[in-house]
Image (tube, rainbow, N blue to C red):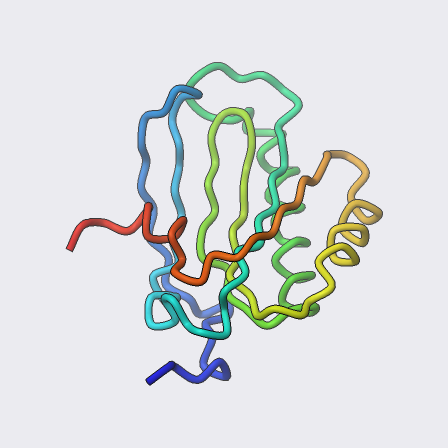
Length: 148
């Protein structure tokens, strides 16, 4: 039986933090553990992602701290806009030295183009890239779950 979407986690979500080595450097992974009961929910089959490329090169370890603060404010805007415009859950934030990426699983029917256009109009300091695709089995989220 599917979990009721009225129970989607909000500001009270429990997050875990991990790190991994990649070709780009260190990848910081914030995973919404409170999203696990909704894993593969039949109504949350659209993976919605936003990427914010960093403008300041910082080497292989971590993003530039001052720019990361700016990007964190943009992250908050994205989370608020998606919460206002779609039914879904923020499941991952991935940060490496080149960009920050936010991943949501949402119900079909949201006007993703309008969400993206609105965010780009509100944020003039950084590029905001957007993509959406069907991922009913939450394959991307599962890539970042620890083995059982």
